[in-house]
Amino acid sequence: MGKSNFSEEFKRDAVLQITWKKKFAASNAKGNDEAEEIRRLKKEQARVTEECDILKKRPRISPGVRCEPATGSRTTPNE
Image (cartoon, rainbow, N blue to C red):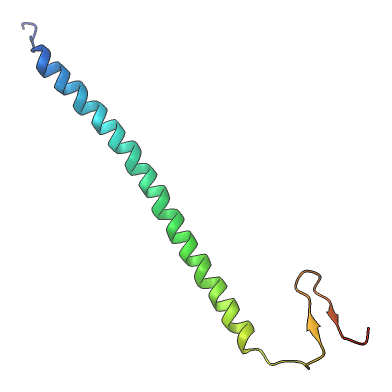
């Protein structure tokens, strides 16, 4: 079996193709991460929209009672 002799041009092209494949694979993996993040954000948006719709439909307790989401306590104007 003899040693294969490839031209310099062929070797250069082979290296360029391998380099391109590595770069493409890395960018494709990044694209997959971005697609996963988009799916996660859409799911979260749907959940938040549903919560907002539920809160919009809830009955009002009385005009003078407010709900403070940060503390979870209710206050009235007379307090």
